[in-house]
Image (tube, rainbow, N blue to C red; front, side, top):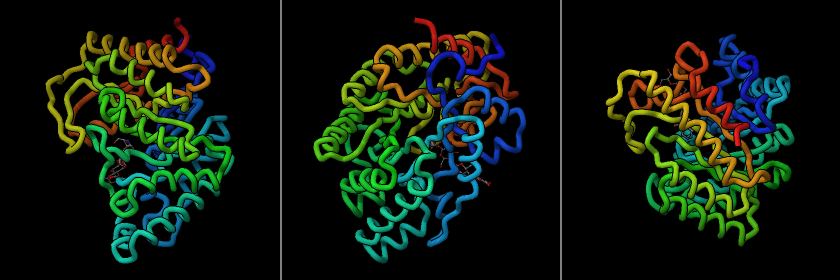
Length: 335
Ligand code: G3I
């Protein structure tokens, strides 16, 4: 029935990423958010630049509001993202340049433990490290964290988070790993190494920003390989675009300029097959859920970021469900 939300289709975590201030000022968006999702990810509110934009002062208002929102609606809260090169404000770069790697590691520890500790028991899981690998291939990304601390910043970040909340699930999260086998292999080697060192990593996030022609066989093989690590697997930022974009520099090729009924249908089928593949190859105990990133075509990050008119989500510009919405829902229950 159309009265059901996506969260009512199965005992399955369906997530939506939101900026809480946008939700609270838009009744229609709020209703959608409450009705459809049993898991919520903060799109931007829990990033380092939002929590500690200047040295020494933590801003908690938005996150506190988000926590109450989720408690009120009985939604799992997913913390995104503790350590991410893009999330780090300029002052951290300046301080590191001045005070070196030791300062950076002690700041990282203090930051992670302050944030995770404050929301202990309220945030079910964290993206502890986000996008530590290069856009393509299997090498570590040369970020400010990597360049100053080497790859051990990753192990340290997980250990600090675990000390602050031993119950929380701790994820590594990245993009393109569903289609770039070299990158996935790099990530899996890292996971193997971390586990051998008893680093408390419990999950792997596939962002899954895919395109209508991303081969499903690749996606299936990648999810399967990842599940063999034994970690929980989260599809953490799902959306499906039509046009081509440039991952690394932004920008895109606007070859499709109109969303026809036929394209809507193709997209609907792809959304359904993604759920089915996930349910098929990820063992039930490792299914952490599927989260949509900016789940309306009105708000999608794709449009400003790549300067493309695209329709990657399950709700249209008027916030009405698209065929993809219903098809995804069926994917949650059909064999
Ligand atoms: O809020 C300001 C607004 O006041 C200002 O006028 C406007 C002009 O630039 O910027 C607004 O802030 C923007 C913010 O989104 C809120 O919309 C930032 O510039 C913009 O950089 C920021 O982009 C976010 C991006 O991460 C960077 O943090 C996107 O919303 C968000 O969807 C995107 O999410 C990332 C994930 O965290 C990691 N994986 C990839 C994913 C998509 O890029």
